[in-house]
Length: 388
Image (tube, rainbow, N blue to C red):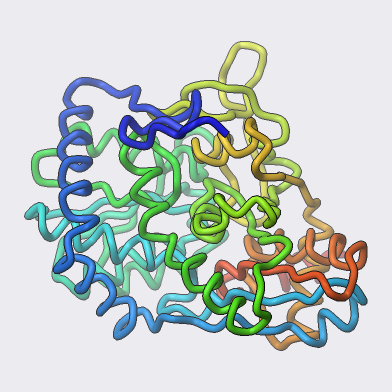
């Protein structure tokens, strides 16, 4: 694989920063501060302290014995990001970025959210540190995830419903970026996925890499060797890049990302610029982003993180799609076999594992990243199953 020039924010041909000069100035300052603090012992001690004492890390790598037995193939381990405070992996990156925002003296934090988990995590840390918080969320997603909207408001955040376009995640990102351009002097944009202009994809990966740092150590303790594959759902790509990070340079470990079949940027996208960075994008013939759909609001995005685009193009990672029907079945399967209700996003990864595990031998090992818990989704799933 060719060297990835992370310093300039490029992963092969993907990444970069295609933004107006005023925003570039703000982003360059964030990049400068991130590079200053990411290896700073005092900053990292504070980050680790809050991950342990507030987030509840490290979380377990749970052997899914009943699911393994039912599928009759590879041993399946679950990396339990669902056990973090606020219910998903999102809090890892949010905690890192809020500490950076604090160091930079930000008076106001803005964020975008799809499923609401990033919004809840951002509202949580803003409440904790006493910083003003504004969350942009597609109007359609506010309806689908009304409980998370209430959580954000309960935590003191102002939730702005965006009714432009499809009223989904892409439109929320558009509005958050517009806000940043207007208010960059006092506002920190706490971006929730491994997307956006540099330095966000690098920064989000850095803070989420704790997922694979832990799972690598845990699987070596439990099995004495590395897994054969790591599987994670992919929307923008934050949980997956965190789950993959410490295995990218381990060629024996397959990296498997799973997308919704109706938002499959990695399997059907073409290189293009969206939201200030270059990645694989689902586009029409005129080059406009295509409408996307997923029953998991957090995966409903026409682009993908630039490093995932690079991992796809270079062949280091594999990406597959699953249908909504397969996701609903997997949601129920994990709930019934292990007593763990996954987020609909995470159920995409489960759905692929259900197909893959039986094709592998019993001495092979899969790590499945359970990126979040399904409390936020049970009402939506109840309605969908009722209508079947």
